[in-house]
Amino acid sequence: MLVHQLRRLWIALTSSLWFVPLVMVLGSIALGTLLTLADLRLGTDWTLRHRLLFGVGAAGARGMLSAIAGSMMTVASLTFSLTISTLATASSQYTSRLIRNFMRDRVNQFVLGYFVGLFGYCLVVLRTIRGGDEGQFVPPLAVMGGLVLALASIAVLVYFIHHIAESIQAGTILRRVTDETLRAIDGLFPARVGDPAPDDKSLGESVGADAVWHPVAAKGFGYVTSVDTATVLLLATERDAVVRMTVAVGAFVTPAGVLCEIALPAAPDDETVRRLRAAFELDPVRTVEQDAAFGVRQVVDIALKALSPGVNDTTTGVMCVEHLAVLLESLAARPIPTRVRATDGAVRLVATGRSFEALAGLCLDQIRQSASGNTAVLAALLRAIDGAGRVAISPDRRRSLARHARLVVQLTNASLSCADDRDPILRLGREVRAALARGVNRG
Image (cartoon, rainbow, N blue to C red; front, top):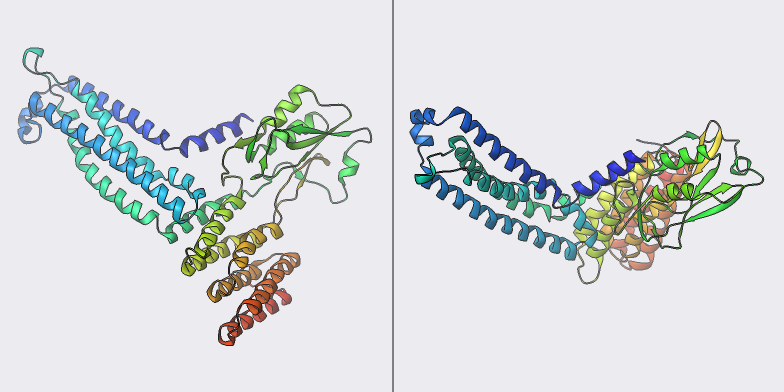
């Protein structure tokens, strides 16, 4: 459980706008201190041979570092303003669920940390400069370091502006969400913990005759962002019990909502309930790390916004379907782990998770319902179904995809009156359904 909690903490820290900048500020302060100590050890006599580079006096060094420090705070404010403006633009133009993606953007975090860190660096070095009655001391390496970092900040600012302009483009946003979701699909819930339950081992046989299902209430509310399934499996083994999860990752629970149920002859003790409850992470917003469906949800939301009557952006809608096709192919070609997990041949955990049918519906249903009369989006949906059918690993999945293809064809017949628009889509639909019926894996 400790490893799981540390991982969740690390994800939360690296997804914030303050952690990386804070680390960079501390690093800048340490760098300024180290360079100043190096100057104390080396002395300043060697700078006489390089007057052009290190010939600045105490007043000049103070003036230069003061100017750099002041300008860095101005630029940091500009950086923060641009970031907030980008968040507002992405939220209104695409979906508010993208805000976290921009907050965790490493470039945004680095640039903000660079400028604020350089401000801290200048302050640390400034306080060490002495002149006049105070005794002459100008740390040449530290002052030169400030100048080099200030010159580098010009390139950092130019790249940041380029990055901001690029990051609000639909193609860039969709690529990042798709890549993140593909990584989440690699660890699709439930995680592979324990051993697959034997085929002839039913749940009823594993639950003792005197066992009763005891619910474990959430006592809090929010979205289930992760479940420490390894801890749940270990606890069930220790108690010689079976745990049945009742909520999936991504679901919203209320304080009275049931997280899971445990089969025991008597009511579970407080320690067991506490450990089970602690295995479920509740947050105000969904995250994609253990919830691949949330990544799909983001792309679908962008498509729905693009296809809404107020926006009517068919091109973005088609781009969304094309990226969803990548996710759908990955899901169709991947075995989804069994819900039932066992230890030493005994069922210990019954997890919850979305089936391929549910995930395919999430990818396709709402977009199809919003694509009435839109020939480009309808054709894109059929191409996405065809691509997933090429790599589908089971007849059940091909039948599910065939059902979606049939629904697209039905919508085409109902919403398109012009034969020139309707016939090419119907022809594509027949080809896709025929390929799915043949059931040939062409991956």
